[in-house]
Every structure is written in C-alpha cells, then in structure tokens.
Length: 290
Ligand SMILES: [Zn+2]
Image (cartoon, rainbow, N blue to C red; front, side, top):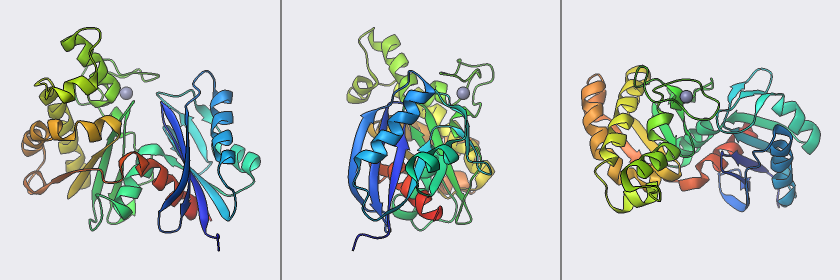
C-alpha cells in the first residue's frame, strides 16, 4: 500500500531538494538540483521539474518550504532575499501545474517544525530554530503550536546601522549579515586571504568564529526574551558544520542578553535532521494541506 505519501520541496538559495515523505516523516526518495536563479520563471519551472522527477504513486499533496515572506491567506510568496521570487501566487500556480493540494510555508519554519516533531525540539513546548545557510532563516513553536507568520528571524537587527544585509534586503546589521554561511565566507576571505572559506575557518578552529558565535548568542537572547524558548536548535549547512565553534561564545552572550531564568536554562542543540529538516518540514506542511 502506497497511500498517505506527500512530496516535500525545500527550495533553498543554492539547491532544490525534493523528496517523497510518508506520514511519520520518513524520507523515501529524494532528488536534488541547483536552484535556477536567472529568473522567477526558471525557478518555478525548476521546482515543478524536481517534483515530477519523483515517483508520484500514492502522493496526495505537495508542500513547499520557500525562502520568502508568505501571505498565508492568499498563498503568495511575497518576496525573497536570496532567490528571484516576488509577489508570486505560489499556491495557486503549483496547484494548477501539479494538480494536487499544496502546502506553502517559509523554509526556516518548515525546518523548525520538522525538528520540533522529529528532531532536536522533541519534548519541548516552546522551541526556536535558526538555520545558518546561504541566508539565515528560522522558525518558532509556541505552546506546542507552529508560529505561522513572516518569521524572517535572519532579518532581525542585532547591530544598529551595522553591516549591509545581502541579496534583496536593504537593511543593515541583520543577523544574516553576520551569521549566514555567506557572511562567514566573506569573513574568511578577510581573515585568511582571497582563497579563504568558511569551511577552512571551522577546520582551523579559528578564533574569529567566536565573533560569529557572539552575534548568534545575541540573536538567541532576543528570541528567548520574546518567545520564552526553553530550547533552541541551530541548523543549516554552515550552522551544523560550525556548531561546536559557535556555541561557547553564543552561550556567554545568551547569559548576558536573555532574561532569567531562560538565559541560564536555555538548551542550545545542534539540529538532528541535518540538511533534510526543511524537506521533512515541507512534507509535514503538505499533510496539513490535505
Ligand atoms: Zn536583511
């Protein structure tokens, strides 16, 4: 029996990861392609092609985790910092092209939901996740309910009039300008020379990563003060790779910035589902679209 399957699609700034997922969140088969970023049309064609490449048998819905602010009522992707998406009626367009019910959510929120139900957030009531990748995303669970808003946690201001943000964001001093994998690539070039990479900084246990960890901790402290999270998880490609290097400085900043008792008690965990978190979360969102 092959009923009760969905397809989840994690649309990232660098790659599209799509997979068939069953009702308990198990990933059965995946495909991966680079994200076409030349135009919005190419991007939408790319996600449709990725979905169609997977076996369709028993698939009842498709869920998308999209790096965009989402208008949940109308199913619109309002705008994305690192991909060419702007004011797209994403849900209607995908429903028409794929002929299935469509779930749509911010990519970081998808990852947080997956970690909450099946990974590092299990057993909590108030949980925050930050994903450090091309950009910085994240998601929030409050009193056991997924917080479904814009949830662009990476575009929180942590340094007033600080470093310019990246992509289509005009802001300054946002988390993404300090803690994303892309930001740390730039930092690596500054510190190690033009061939420097974030990966090399991590391999060297480079002390400059403590600065990144400090920015991360300041961010977590503010999020704890708003949401009262008892646990936070750090995910995303860079976040998982650099977790051990970032956490000591992040922990010190949390102790200063977060109000008691959360600052002392906050659990900072590495994401458990790895780079599949967004994909699994998109699948969970697809089930909710049924
Ligand atoms: Zn920004």
